[in-house]
Length: 173
Image 1 (cartoon, helix red, strand yellow):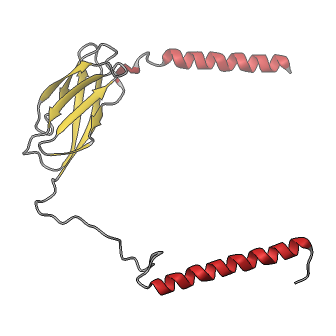
Image 2 (cartoon, rainbow, N blue to C red):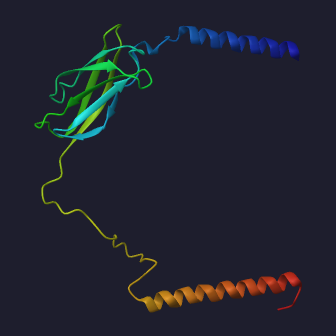
Image 3 (cartoon, one colour):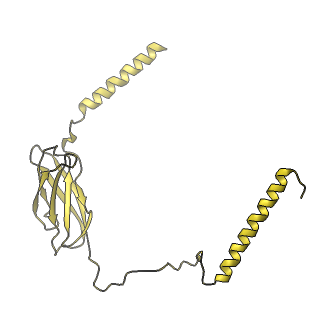
């Protein structure tokens, strides 16, 4: 039994080691470009960051898909990430745009998506109040009905407690 367990454990370790040896040491060009905010309006400022380029790595970003052009990602103190900023042009149309960053060293490239949304129209009325779903609320328009409901619940609770108490003592109802 022990011999079989040792053989299976050794085989599992060998397979795991071979799998790790075949994996790239540092992402190998895969990773993500974090875009903050992921949804921006035309004229807004956008920050991008990535850890793929290494702790002191730099990158060149490309936001030409949205019309912003190239920008630089510089090393930062935030968990070894390179961070850069660009401004969405005021003429940008609503849609989803791919933002690309290429590390200065190596062939690593990462992408992230930026969604450009319309700005709220001037004078647009914002919704307020409750939604009329037909279910009603805890406090309706008639305080007499609300008081009657609360009283009914209180009487039912007191009656149930009294019956359970009598039953626990063995009294016959």
